Structure formats: C-alpha cells, structure tokens
Image 1: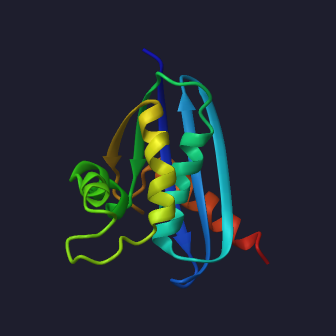
Image 2 (image 1 turned 180 degrees about the vertical axis):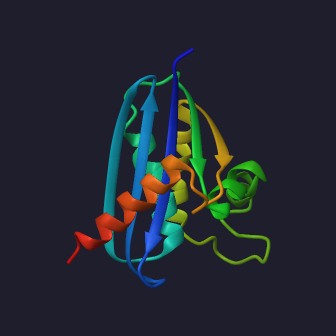
Length: 146
C-alpha cells in the first residue's frame, strides 16, 4: 500500500497575530516541504492550515497517510470524535457555542475522506527532527510577511 507520512506545525507571533504553518511530506526517499503565512491569525488556525495544505498537496486518492502533529486541538478533534460531534450538533460545541474555525474544519473534512488518514500526536519542541523542521518552516514563513 502506498503510504505518505506528513509532519505539520503552526506558529503565531502573538495570538492572534502574524502566523505561519509548515509541513513536510515524506514518501519513501522523497520529501516535499511546504509553508505559508497569514498576517492576522491564530495558532490553532495555523495548525489546521498546515494539515489542510499538506493533504491538498497529495494528488490522487487511496493513499495511507499518517499525519503527525503537536496540536492537541487537531489530534483530539479527530481521535476523540469532536469533529463528528460538531457536525452532528450543527457545528455547536459541548457548551452549545459555535465551533471555532468552522471554515477550516469544513475544508478539512473532504480531504480526510479522500485517503485513509491516521493522526498521531508528536510532542512539540522535543527534538523530533520533522516536527522541528515544520516549526522552522512556519517561523520562516512569518518572517517572510515583513
């Protein structure tokens, strides 16, 4: 089975403030790095953008994909079923409030369905090579806004 490993990270200089995201896609011996930034955003939005843009970069479907993220927000939404609950509850959270970042979650859903995506938590800033590289890509993207 074809497998792509993805590492993602988001960063913000102030929260809200200028933000960036970075991702590394690994397929066998091939690697692709992508990054982007927004002038006024939040860390959570950048974490989600990293995943969205990484999944968008995959052409075709039927892939086994492992997404590694240090974002508890993203990981918990997938692994603990929050995303499914939000959809079922009309995009309301457990406090009956509107779910934050709905636009990004809604953009992510079809991308998650296009392939077989598993998510794995990686501890941030702990020396993981690819997590550190994604953080560097995100921070460099922020610098590029100036």
